[in-house]
Amino acid sequence: MPFTQEQKRDFISELQHYLYVLSYHEKRIPHIVSDGIYGRETAEAVRIFQKLHGLRPTGETDGRTWDEIVSEYKKNMQPIPLSVFCTGMILDSSSDEDMIYIVQVLLKKLSRHFNNIPGPEINGVYDENTRQCISCFMEHCGRMGEPFDEQAWNTLAAEYNAVEI
Image (cartoon, rainbow, N blue to C red; front, side):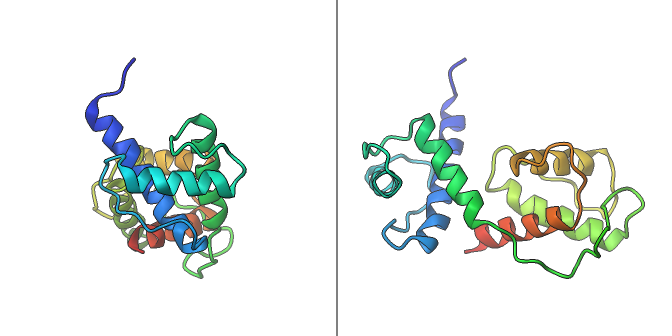
């Protein structure tokens, strides 16, 4: 099934976001604007990334290049521990309303940057919509089926900080 133009722009924007974040960790990758257009600047950033990672520097994002960019992005997104979630705490319907509210706000912000993370209604209630949004976030992070615990919170905070760069 072919992608729509909007889906292509979304994927390109996500790629550009990954490259933008990586450019702070690898100065040879130029900072690029996430505009959803695979132009000369994006192709050059991809080409430099490919060269640095032993891939054929074509400037085109094939499956292997995409996987390597996502892998590097995730490596560089190792969360810095925050003492917001207590050790052993899991976010669920019995959680404090304020904690649920904070998670909803962060997920809403990420939903504007990642097509595969929907934005929840911000209401401080761990309802079905919030559960589904958290599930999509966990899948995005490669932690599908795991609880939203301290590590998930730290990953969420790191992702949020990355989009705020």
